[in-house]
Image (spheres, rainbow, N blue to C red):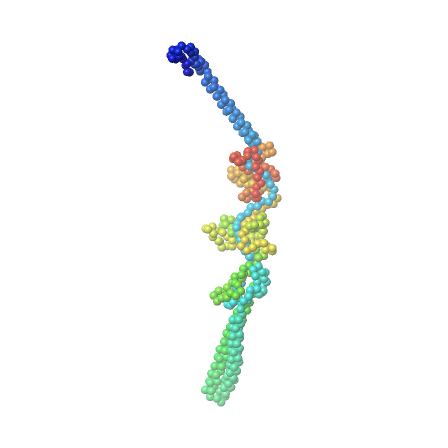
Length: 426
């Protein structure tokens, strides 16, 4: 507070100056000073307790809302007992190959003059497929024919000489026996006969050789016409018109003919599973791009020779499948299923629904069944065919029963109170 007082100069001037007393704050007693902060302290604590109680109430409300529906049904993953087909299979990867095929090649050298088929053409046994320029082969046939004719003409002359020598020998022998001819003349006749006979035999050998050469030349001429050895389809062509083929070292391949109906599936079966397969077993397969379409067949044979891939031993299992529409192509990849056991119109559940047998011994399994009002009943069931995902139920359950297959997750993205019903794969 600021005090206003009269100054000495004002007094000296004889003026009356009003003097204002200093303004001071009222005195506060000791009790009042203590009450003021305590009042506000108690009020703050009361507000904080009110806020805390409100938060607890809100949290309880939210928790009750979220967990109000959590009961026995929402604490488990469940599945229905379904009716349908179930099977146990051995899975393998395979490829499609022609039932039979042959590589058609050139057995004689020369230029490929013409090709009479194209890829995909169907051919019959004996059909003309291609022709090699026959000029050289025809010339060799003509040469061999002339050589044979020359030798045959020589043979006729040698044959006449032989007959003459034979007659002279016979006459000489008669005269010698009668004593009318010297022994030396008889020896000359005998020598001439032997020479004529040897010359005739040598010429006959040359004729045989000439005939063989002629047959070879004729065969080479015939080989210039490439004929289909079997019925089938042209699936590959390796030579072009105008190309020179050299059959001296090895037979050059011109094209391949294959039988595509039926097709043969070559499936690679691991050694751990091959002992479970036998000839005659049902088998089916699927291919890429055809969805659930299945092709069925029967296992024909398992090849005895193994195939090692990456230190893993496989065996080739072969079976045939009809292919009248040519939907199946060579080298297609197949996912093959060898059927070990199967049942139709059977009850089945997910395999995860099965409990352990008593003490781990063979016997009935247990299954937990969820009732309509959330009750849980443990039942003994008789199990038939099982596979990796499903199990056949022979007794103990009915179609439509709800079985427990696991505990439901209460993760943040899981909404409690929802019932998870799973349809098991077969």
